[in-house]
Amino acid sequence: MTSMGPPAGGWQWPEPSGDRLYDWFCTDESGAGSMPVEQVVGTDVMVVRADAPGLDPDRDLDVAIDRGTLLVRARRRRNEARPSEMLRSELRYGAFSRRIPLPPGAHDDGLRVGYREGVVEVRVPLGR
Image (cartoon, rainbow, N blue to C red; front, side, top):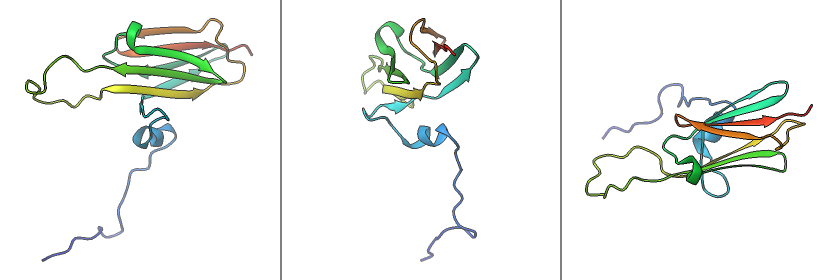
């Protein structure tokens, strides 16, 4: 019998950076999965966009600011197909969330939240 060990030079793992490491391995304290985001900070507004396809934004989306952190929470619900009818399901369902520290001067007065084509956009005013 032949034994297989690590390849010459050892195992090579991808090296994620920044939030990618969080996205790969972590959930928040509620057990919710992570949402991929992009964040842009301008002189008077911070814009955060999060992938959240398949939501009913009126029912399945919550955005709040709490103690200097932007919290985006969403829930993606399964369709009504019975398991016997499902041929394949590779989509993620359930709760997703993301906590993003806010820069100094951020406030919730004038906070705007939109949802279009599966992307949540949050605009946080900055009062610098």
